[in-house]
Amino acid sequence: DAGVIQSPRHEVTEMGQEVTLRCKPISGHNSLFWYRQTMMRGLELLIYFNNNVPIDDSGMPEDRFSAKMPNASFSTLKIQPSEPRDSAVYFCASTKGSNQPQHFGDGTRLSIL
Amino acid sequence: AQKITQTQPGMFVQEKEAVTLDCTYDTSDQSYGLFWYKQPSSGEMIFLIYQGSYDEQNATEGRYSLNFQKARKSANLVISASQLGDSAMYFCAMREGVDSSYKLIFGSGTRLLVRP
Image (cartoon, rainbow over all chains, first blue to last red; front, side, top):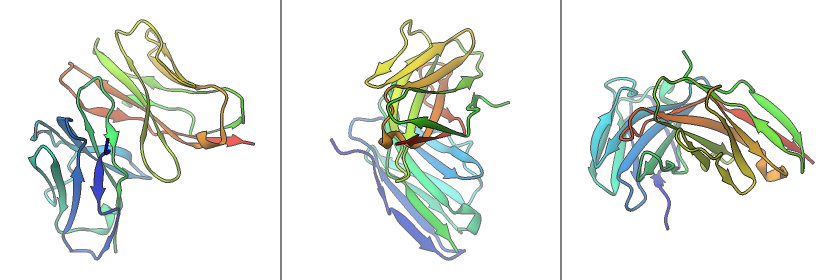
């Protein structure tokens, strides 16, 4: 079975540009999560969806960040405008139940210059 | 207050020996779950093992076992017969609340280095 697929794997862009990160969850998984990992703050949950509906977005840093899940097989995390402090590894994960493990994608390493 | 505490920023272990990575948690919920993940230097997050708060037996998965001590609120990961490929960051995580809550809270991680 295919795992969680994220794209791009690496993104380098200049401050002020719009950045869009993409995620395809594992088929049959009904929950999807976006995390951010930095050395200073570790792994932080940004937002998660159940059945395509955003459930908890309390971790989204500010209005520059937005996430959508238009269908069960696709989600995006958008940053507009991007800032250097947004540089991090962004992970997408999915699961089919609360007592089931979250399976992570390989992450997107984002660098904002 | 920290929900998940991993007190060992870094550890060494000799190849083929066992090692215990500590994890303590803080919750007032009766229903919760505990997870361990491995993150090698390549960056991916790999699920290792899960323990539910109502599980009476300690979870085991191959060389991984979870030493679950509910009264002490600890969920230590034990890796038996360490291998060089076990060198990685290890994260403990907790899902708390009712079964419909899927949110995981991660600890700060322990970096394990296996010596040949």
